[in-house]
Image 1: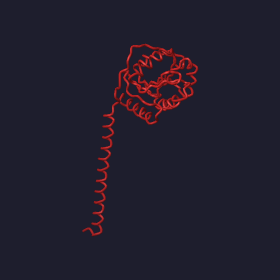
Image 2: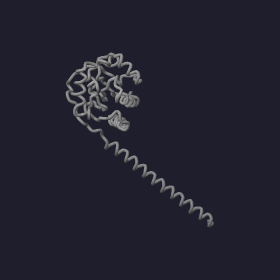
Image 3: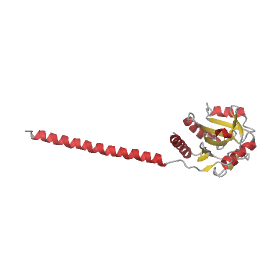
Image 4: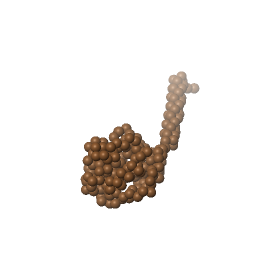
Length: 219
């Protein structure tokens, strides 16, 4: 017959094991709820389609920093970020470039993703100037390309194809060039999936989060 001490020890051990069991059940349920909540958020959050770009059939050609001619329609089946700038800009452009550099460093090896930066001052931004500018941004592959071309083509691209009804509050700088702090995310179907203020750190974080979400959904 077990002694009182042994009975007491057994009761204590039984209570301890039961407490461990209850704690394990609670932890298991909590983890399940967390995982389910994460899955629900991922399943529900889909980047909206803002607008289908106008004039998809317009064929405009531009020259990148390598001296290569590229037709804008060649990127129609790619995911791309559209950016208008000029290298002589000392206002918003440097901050925008820093933001896009963050994006480039994170996604430069992402398949079918491009950052396309179009100069609105092609007279100043020649191919050698763009090449130096790209080098300063530590761009080492074609996932970020800088373009120059005819001023009329660049304005048509900016105003008719990307800016009007999609880019909020376009501004005109002192050189009377179309200028905005916003960049546009375009999908493979030429649909606008997001518009972001590239001078706003929080909005750039949103862009990065949206790109990750978009690429996850594309897999």
